Amino acid sequence: MKNNINNVRKLPTNLDVPVLKVKTERNGLGVLKTLIIIGLIALQGILFIMSYLYFMSVFQYLFFLSLALTLGTCIYVISSNKNSQSKPIWILFLLVCFSFGYIMYFISNEKIFWGKNKKKYNAILERSNKTIEKTNLSTKNLCVKNDCEYLYSVGNFKAYGNTETKYFPSGTQLFDSILDDLSRAKNFIFIEYFIISEGVLLERMLSILEEKVKNGVMVKIIYDDLGSHGSLKYKTKKRIRRMGIDLKSFNKLLPKFTPILNFRDHRKIVIVDGKVGYTGGANLADEYINEKRMHGYWKDCGIRLSGDGVNGLTTIFLRQWEFVSGKTVDYSKYLTKIKDECSENLVVPFADGLEYESNIGKNVYTNMISSAKEKLYIMTPYFVIDDTINNLLVNKAKSNVDVRIILPDIADKKLVYVVSRNNAEKLVSAGVKIYTMKNSFVHSKIVLNENSAVVGSINMDLRSFYQQFESAVYLTDKIVLNDINKDIEETINKSYLIDKSKLKRNKLSYRFFAGMINLISPFM
Image (cartoon, rainbow, N blue to C red):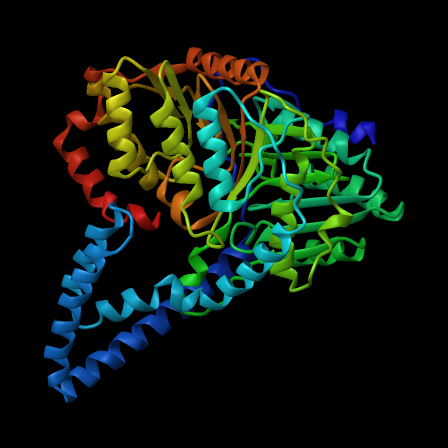
């Protein structure tokens, strides 16, 4: 087993390397299948619109009824709880497509197309909450206490002591540790990823998992069907199942005209025997360990928990497993007995997704930004924010808080990068320091202030805040906070500082183009 682990490529010491773009995540059949599915979905949408327009031409009173319903829907949108970024987009869509826009709005309502799944999740949450042991941890830090109380109130996410945490500043180091812990598994292994991709890393992991299954270890894997579409072949899935691994997909990609396809499992979780757990930004693919490069050097990170806090990640995984498998789980078989010790070093593993009423990831980030008094460091691949976060960052910078944001120098999604860069550059005049890591794609998701940090899968964008299932860990260990701070400072030393004279926003054409793209930012 050690040979498998040691063969993972170590971090390059020089990041000033030529930018290589090697297509590795998709194969031809996957692209063809995607195009067919998109075509069938588009055809269904076109047929629906044409049928409705035909009825409008035959029954002319429908025109006036549609106009009245559109105006009523606009008023409903304004008074709704939707985020401020998406409201004007919906209103514009409703006015332009007044003949059928209101129908599209209401069929995209979560209560309509997600109602059945919501009930299923509610039953899972209610049942699993009864198995979680209560903790009686407290802290003298009021900001940390408030953050922990928020997470408990909105998702029943417990604050744990008696937990060792370790931060990994790269995907390579993260997977070195994951493979090492997998090789020591005795009872069970749980794995959940947005992307699982063919390649060197997957083969190394499967060689370990196959041996573990032969030795009686239970292995369960969840992958997102869209995220892994085209990168995880059908024959590989069959091979994994033949090994004895229980493999399930989330939200299967089907040629069906429904908004439900937009909601994806973006979580990254690995659990070994309930004693060790991981989350972070890296998916299970070669790009994340720089074995192959598509966008220069890939900068990622992750966090390892050992001790009581692993129960939090285990519970998050098992809830999703119940949903995708349709089978009830006995949580007590996988949760360890907690010691419930008083500790200033707290960890709160938490999740976000459509199973919860609140936008947990966004609100945790907002709370951390609000409580920052000395420093606020953010590392994110995407920076698509609403007015609430934008105004908070401006106010913090003007209040003499050291606000720094690190973005990629190379884009993986060019349109999203235009919006991200434009949003970030707006903050420069307020005193926010914006950096782009040289010749690199920054995929780490970190928010750090003087009190705490969050490391996980949650991007600083509207998709993560409103449309995806996410995982993360809130932590307060000063040693780990220093490690994260050190990584951020080292990354800044390898980055460009964007000053006022180099703003792309200085060009009117760029601002106009970014503004146009920003119209669809809630759906990116």
